[in-house]
Image 1 (cartoon, rainbow, N blue to C red):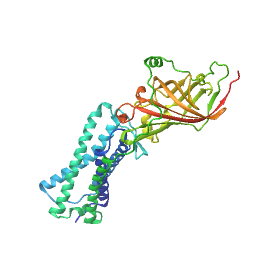
Image 2: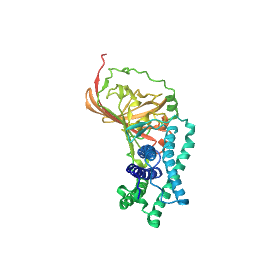
Image 3: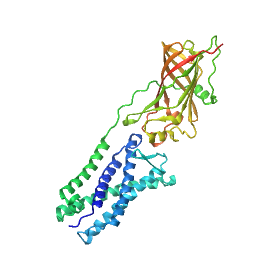
Image 4: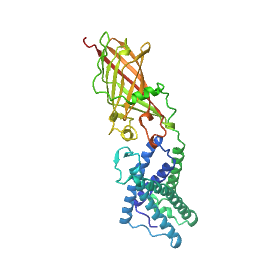
Length: 407
């Protein structure tokens, strides 16, 4: 019996396994942020299938395939399924690529977390059409898959014409059968595993309950002028207020719940502060913390790119977030709160932080927390943020050394 070439056999089974996994992944993966990693994998496997299909077509042109075993309607049906498969394997990845390129939320694509894939130069108005086409092609692929399996079963069980030997490595029918069953098992297993997974756990409780500002305070905050980028001067008092310098090595972190996916945690790599504060006279405090929003990271370069986009921090237009407070109060022992204003993404809102001082004299360790209502600042908009909790827990810790200005 004339068999397919080795290259054709290898490409056939590689594409078969990839297609089974890709279809299962596409139908089973959760939508929204909780399915982000699987969404990235779906794109990576899809582009891999596109590349393998182009290679398979080139190989087919260069290497003649065996003569068909049947004629008439059966041959025409088999030929139509094969043509349909090639169209599906080309158009499904291409429409997926177009879908990502025209989506309202521009999510960068790193193939298998390594190789960047540029967006296609298409207008966003194409998005509804390519989304519909991509979904229809997925169902078309399922139909082709079932027809192909049914045809193989017909040849092996009803006709017994040893068709499977032509595409089996080494011409081994048992090995061909194992591979065929493996493709089916992979698809079903992936669908059940991904669709039934409930990753993550319950989000941790936030460190500080949000403070609801009064209407008067809200109106006053909205009319506050932007603070100047200068160190705060010591307030008028009977004695100078110590000025504190933040030592290197401090941390400013954030976390929020993400539905069934658990908790998203990240940090800001660049931030600085200008602090005038006397632990014995907290009402004389003058605090200003400036955060570089472009330094936000959750440990994944693609998601970091989303944080910088318009749906989250809009770094291209609003590079900094600034917290300012003109006083603080002692809440007991070594604990304090400071009520001030947070300027973020072009909006100013009242914000309270709580913190604790340890150490003595002019060498102190500061640990604190706050809860930020992200929607009040327009942070986390659109479909990518649907499962995110409304409040973001912020925590900070740093060492500080103080100096007392001369009177």
